[in-house]
Image (tube, rainbow, N blue to C red; front, side):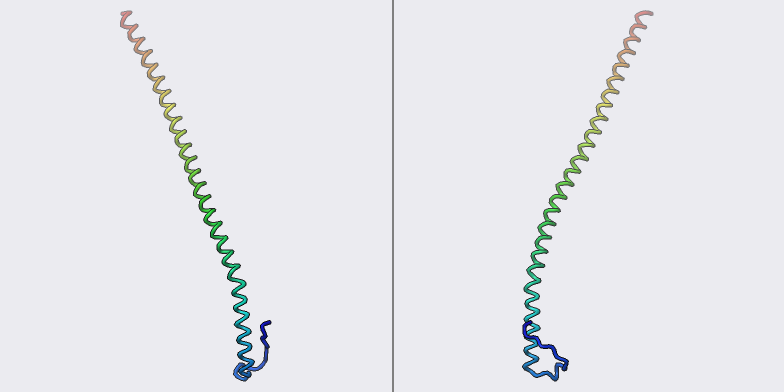
Length: 110
């Protein structure tokens, strides 16, 4: 392809016309290889870059969702704790009211 002619002679002993024709053929083959490979590589790297950016956005969104869910769980836990404290406070208040009522009844009976 491209007119390259292999030979067993050393480069120094080759005819200058043969040597320049082989050099031109090798240069053309390297150029063709570069023109075929570079667009494929550029397309591949571009696709990876687009997918990577999309993946990073999805990951950031999922991370925000996870943090939101974690915060929601923490808030629910705090709410449960607050409800438990309110119930405990209410029962303590009721117990104190009963105790005061009993204390008042004792004072009245004596």
